[in-house]
Image (cartoon, rainbow, N blue to C red; front, side, top):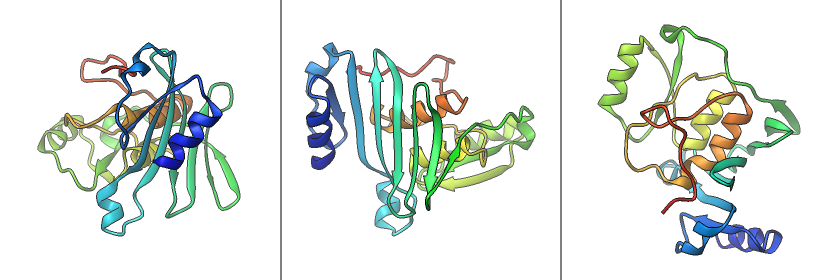
Length: 194
């Protein structure tokens, strides 16, 4: 976290930063551009020595996530996106453009599921959709990466523990890959809020 915040501050001195691992400087609320940093998403998987954790960085401009990076150091895979370039995943000297699946039949959809937070509510929603396929992962960013690659089609999170740094970078990538994130009433997520 220290290195990420230091380097972002050096490269973008007029921008604000909100990081999970640093005190929140409320001055960011008056800034147009705010970097959202989660230096370790999927901490439980890291502790369990599973390769399902990631470093996540996103840039909010106004209220919209515009730039995103999700990097898994264990697998050396990096998802990234920015306006005008699209969404990509890089690994082993290869780069692949990302686009979400066009599958519309919910009974054939694969759900990206949390490895460490089982939810009976999510099970019920999936049952109503008729979705039986699932793939599990730790990091929110890696679950959304599965959707961007077309390995999964939906991710449902009903808990109250998601923070702006959990979704900003991954949402920028998902949007650039043609996907969407909404709250339970179908509204876009809000960023750079208290």
